[in-house]
Length: 389
Image (cartoon, rainbow, N blue to C red):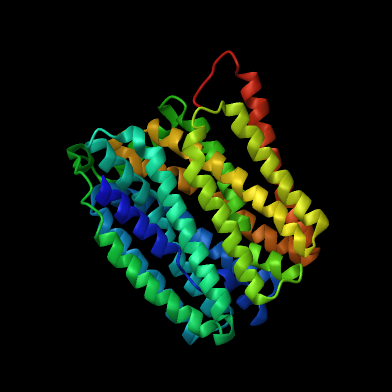
């Protein structure tokens, strides 16, 4: 298991060690994109994930997951080259669409590769621990990238993009270093559409899976829609560029700790997870209501609460799935999430264009709180029929 853990953590670290990440929405704004245009290019990234999530998940069930994840990293590097050549709306649009291809590939393939390797060893109970550590490695990559970006901000955006290309190629090599995923004969039977239908059908039929899928997709779509706007939050409340890098690093550090320790709370009742998500949304509302430099403290609380909920919910979801269609069903979850994220990203930009970024942040924090409250209420109505979530 050591090779799996080291390889998976290396991949997640390098995948997230992107020096342009803390500043790319700020770069968009400084190079003339309006709030609506920023929302549009972010929605384009999400739309690509939406279209490709399930097809790439099926490919990950049928072909080499290591090679698919490696090629995906090279595709994102090509997108960064487009940003260097065409630093305008259309260049940023194309670059983010290529980034979306990477995200769609990594989503289902990575989770399935880790779980199936553990399953083959009879250690699937360790998935939440391993997944939490890979999440911590991902956040560590964001922290390192954000700190490096803050220190190198004076070199300009082009230098940060070139550095991001270098680490992307490192992530491609790390994907190939993962142990080969176990080959399941059931995966090779039937055609593409038959396999896809089977995965989608199991998402609806397996006990507890549908409720988990909807809950995870709902909360992840809101949080994903907001994730790329946090640097703009820092910019809006008056943080200088080096401080924005520190802000992004701090958010990621809190997320890393929360994800790594989430397994200690694996026995939390579903209603507690729902309540924690509601508190996370209210923390965003508090940050938007105060809207000062010190308001970022509320966002630290939001990140910690969210990743405790997300990591535990994902582990319960994976345990409820069948191995031969695991990546496909996980990609159905991603498809549902991305469908909502595409709309929410664009809507955030349009809302900020018509009002202010402050009001947009407050509205989306309230939406996340409503997701938690809604599932808590639904759980109370089903007390006589308890499920995994």
